[in-house]
Image 1 (cartoon, rainbow, N blue to C red):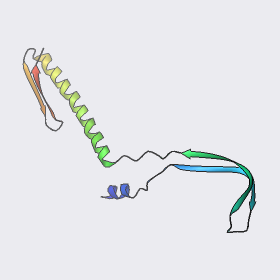
Image 2: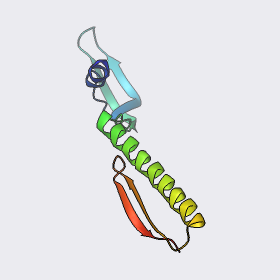
Image 3: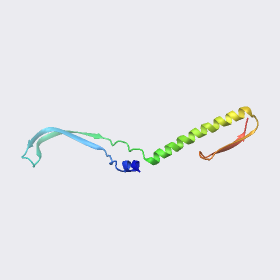
Length: 107
């Protein structure tokens, strides 16, 4: 629950622009602002928004995909090891947690 609160409380980050100008200007009394009297040269720098943080759903899916990949490698290793000792025999491998159900005949 604490993690959810932290993720929800992160403010949205947007792209920012910074403009710096050089030129002639007149400063008027406090509260009335600054007025330009001639041509000004301005440079605008745009900073892109930082990437969005990874959501808990994205982290979960990444973990699931990693787990399936590891389970597939283990299944492949098991089949090769079995077939090395039992050439020509049938084999089957099942791992419901990883969604693997395979069978075949050893070469």
